[in-house]
Image (tube, rainbow, N blue to C red; front, side, top):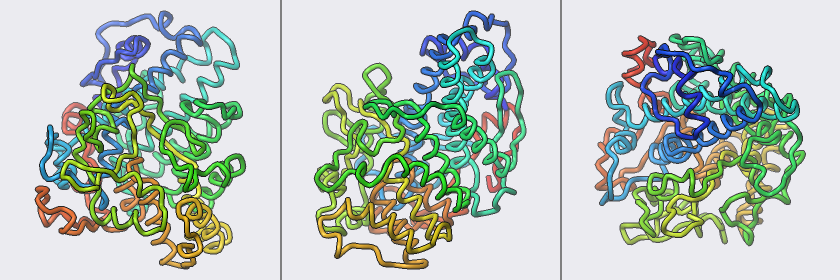
Length: 485
């Protein structure tokens, strides 16, 4: 791949300065000269700086800080662009309308580049950490985080650029796996091998990371419980229900029902009691109006160009006293369909100064419920326990709205609860794709939005649901394009 080979010199230096430029040749370009690695990666302290740079790359607007989460929202059934769009981004409209192609791929190229920049940083750390001078305890924690973060980044690439496991299981096309800073990678692995590497990286981190402290703010870094949570998510996507439940239970052994936000304590801000891992955003790494919060809130100069569909508004208003419905506020059309989950903590000047959740405790309850509903543990009765534990925290009339379903109806109920609970947290369309559920978008939800009526309803396994490999990558490395493009 053209985008994976350049890291060894330029990215290495720029990451330490927190000023990494976006190289167009991140996978296979050969450096014109050699920069002494001893100046950059010869100490644990310097590698810690490089790790901090990787966290910043992951939190940027080209990755978790906007593109991935916004894409997940607008390609699903619950969000749409407003009729009169302020500062429209044509590439995002392309995604919303399901009109991507190899040459017109929405935000695909930016996300691809950003993910491999982060992977480049992490590979440099892993290549040099064992021989770097410094405290061995710090060395092990840096190493653990680098492994776990690499696994997470590859997972996000995989669920975005590869068909879901449900389609062809491990036989489908996976990702190019660049695992050192020096190797050149031009071939895509199988989906089986890709998931194997993701799980291997996460487990490698889990094997050496220290126990959690649970100090406020500690979850801005990947932790032991955070890795267990990510493993539960990865196994859920892989439809390995037993392991999804196993790792969910590892989380629930240390964070439980009392840590869930309740009806009277539901405040979606930084480092809540449900935080397992989140990206820290402050004035130094915020991207302002290009950040996540500004996409959904037009107040104080935000763009607010994505609002909830009536279908989602109705879903939020199902339960009596559901605190999630209180996140609905005035939108740019003068109705109450702006779903403001991310509140800028710095006032109008910041726009998107708020943390970005990677994974929360409520998701773990839903993972455990879904795993059991698909045969793990004791099946539906155990699934209902996990699901109802969360529902009890989201309504003032639990007895009326208690889940009692079984079989397919229970799976539908869990999917609905994921829509309510995890909206705008990077799930959305991915939940349709990974479960093989076709995406149905009622025409009444998308009037005057520019969406072609033929693109309202999309098959879960259609090429339209996943990004094509960017054309510039295909040109540079002759990598195999995704089937269907």
